[in-house]
Length: 626
Image 1 (cartoon, one colour):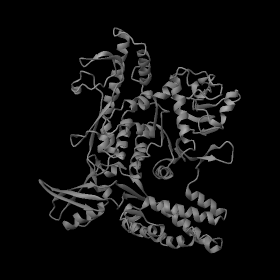
Image 2 (spheres, rainbow, N blue to C red; image 1 turned 180 degrees about the horizontal axis):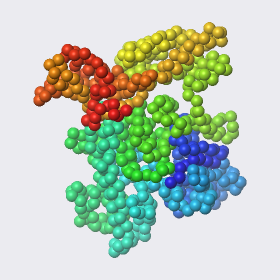
Image 3 (cartoon, rainbow, N blue to C red; image 1 turned 90 degrees about the vertical axis):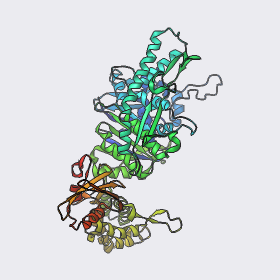
């Protein structure tokens, strides 16, 4: 299957003027403030692909229909998606808005008021196949998942119908399941006879196809959640989607899950009509069913469950060119939970899909970008921001790609002798490095009035850097003057005169210090289970297996050629197993290294060796997971 290499939009939603986005073979990470047009790109792709299933091939989205009954010239077609600044031109026939994609095989598909069409004469099987290999997830999906009131049972039918079934093609079939449902619904409006076997068989086929999808998803949902999204201290949960036939043994309560047409159900008379399906969800914790999960779990956990369901519904095999578009889907998550999703996307999803990620959150954008730059191949990504150009009329979105990192920008400003800009960029770079390197224990402090954790200022974080380097075994010498540099020109109030040779030399020295600081990487998560162990031999020759449990994600420290477990790794020593003897300990430590030293001291042996070589989880050595 071909890959999208270019998107063009003109006169659609937020884009009054021609807007080209050259993707090439890249993944996309785009930042844009609310109203900047990033969601319009997301919907442009969605609308173009789904138009192949519309009776008019999507022409309605680009047509203006005047209300002849009033003679006012108002827009009667409420479904049009034409940019408001171009409406009059469309009415006069002088302008034709469009959405266009160019594929890497040279084929071009355009959606305008004539509907979806190929500029190369290609048949629509290509676009149908792209739907099968496309995934769209935005905040509306999460909202639909959360929509059940506290007094209601969760019914996910609307979630599936809107977000999953339009892109699900059952094996061996040529009709997408949402389209199949629409055909069944349209036929029901003519009140078919109950002896119409063809119609009833089509309902049976629909229920069977949906059952296959849900049963396959049930094999993966719990594992995806427990492995990737649950908090370290939380229990594993068991998530099951419920979709059972009327006479299934699992449906002893006679809940109307299946799509049904008739006038008698569960031996009771009902109105003859089509009854839409229902999809329930059952969640168990420690074997105990959680009734009304929407009242038991917080919003972050419900969002994680919703994402687990969506990812479990992905096909197990996709073709080259498959993509996943994600638009502000993590609004309800704090940064720690967003990090889990980022790592899942970059470790698992990206193996099969191109990622097109849109966000209005600048911190999320920079965090995502930094992880890619430090842990993955950033040459496979297009980074940039979408900004409204208010110098022009009408105001139009303008994409600004980011092709240079902060260090390159600082060097560029220094070469132009723009020392004021150097100071600003150096401060930003310093703040960013410390935010990524320092653990919460060094980066935050208790507020004296509220006792809540608040961010330390830059001075305090620079002072904490020495403690960080000490525990991580890093020479602090290159960074010892950062506090002085901060007072001289990293302070926003200290830019009155930084044009003298003295300041130029200090700026150069600060640049070198920050380059060195940028070389330290503590953002890569070691993908291991929470329960770990290591083995020691005491002075009597007895072997002890020490069982541990992590209390936070385990991070890898990389500096020069060294790769080892970061010192900052809270844990609990749970057991000491020696032969058949098991000693319960359950003692907490701020670091795996402190736990290891404590055990070695207890048995009078020297604490030596690299923990990355000693630690194991149930799947094997941690070293093998790097």
